[in-house]
Image (cartoon, rainbow, N blue to C red):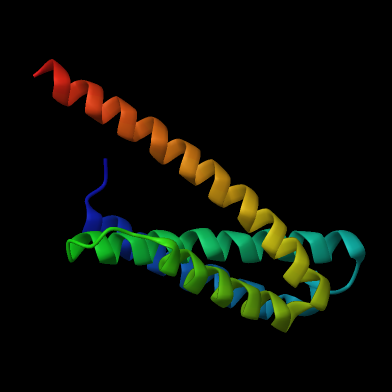
Amino acid sequence: MASTGRSMLVSLLLFAVTLSLLEMYKAKFASSELMTIVGGLVSSLLFLLLLTFIGNYQESNGVRTGWGAVVVAELVALIVAGTVHRVCITTCFLFSAGLLYEVDKLSGMILVKSESQVRRR
């Protein structure tokens, strides 16, 4: 498993690269209905990367990640999606909600697994 610092750096770099590519090709993403949906999907990946960065930053400072980090990451992703196309805002929100559900489910599974390992020892 990657350390907190390494994960934070990788998520920040991927966020910057994804943001740059999204802005470079925003005319392509706004060109058709399907590409507009893809633009929302890419924007929701920005949400996931930024949430990972914020969560790792807070963990390195000994603070638990809460709803504040989710709201900040979502607002940034929605603002970026709005620079591409108005419909990207809606699709970004929907895809981000799905990603957040899956991340929450995954973290719950990891928490249960780590608690069962602690009980064995």
